[in-house]
Image (cartoon, rainbow, N blue to C red; front, side, top):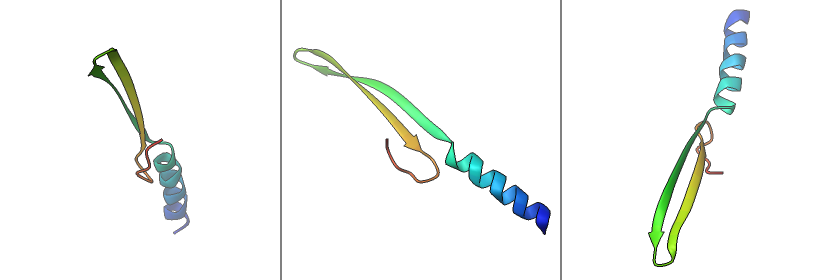
Length: 47
């Protein structure tokens, strides 16, 4: 059981630091705007 507890703690740490990013551009009349998005996969929050 102790081994499972260690695995869960390590898995929780890994989940807390997994992010996904994307950069895109948006065309406007004056040129381009760039949009960068960072998503935390664990909490699903956009940063």
